[in-house]
Length: 440
Image (cartoon, rainbow, N blue to C red):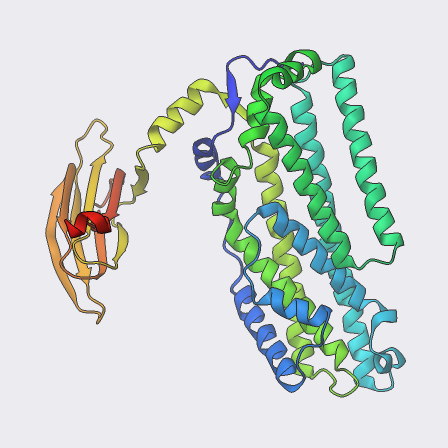
């Protein structure tokens, strides 16, 4: 059993610092381009033949909604969509005339479908492997802090029994003829049940917490970890902020591919796929599977190296540095750094506080503030001047965009370590007096 002395659960501040070393390269521009083209194709299909009741209507409704916010829910959504696509790409589920391959175009399309099937099959296996390994890693890491005697054995037995019961529930649903959508709804429900039970355990008080801590042998630090790890503003929210956006775009892309194939199959007997549509579909499948597997490879490395616990000293230092909302960046020689603030109400206050992290040589940096009105006209609010540090604020007289600019363009050799905080404070509304007071 590993010692938990002197350690605390990871914090959002720690993850922010840790994730700074793991920058995900932007998705290919083809993701947005091909998603847009597929969306246009689906719109054409729906204009000529509206969505039928049932699965088509559900898919159209889903594409009009935002992707889920949670990273793991997006993983499950991508897995569900890939499995649905594979189902559609299996020969027994092709349109009848395509199965017969009565024309050279149909034969060519059949060959392309086989290639798409292989690509999605590979991506699905990659995702399944990632989810299984990540789940096992979390459990095994937690178990290193559990006494390795009968208590640890009891916890493993309980977990295995719970997972067998969940799998039996899924098997029973499948045997009843439920759809893939129904199966994944159950899988996600089970995932949320795991979370809910952990949160309840971590929040338990009094006799129950004492029983867990001393009789079962779960250290207090583990209870704290499982209680707060998935809070709305907890450590995992930092992960969603950093890595959610590219994953959300991939979730939307695979849903569009699924919707397009589903609509095309349903209308194939009266409207066959055009060569341009087939080419875009093939490109979209290639780009999606490539980018999704790249994302999984990246996030696997992030997860594999991310600790669950850190020393109390590290957590305290990070929280102290981050609670005041200061940011630290490096402004290279010959470059600038800017922050834009959009002001929607006059009499708002714009405030700043910055300083350079000094070494053996005292350095300065240029600073100015510029205003751009809604018509695009620019004016200087604070003229350019060089500072080692500065604090200031002003009250806005106009709505529009205010740009704070730190200028290191004059330096040929020295980068500047800038620590800064900026705020846009809306005007304070006067309290409304109650009706009885107004009468008086």
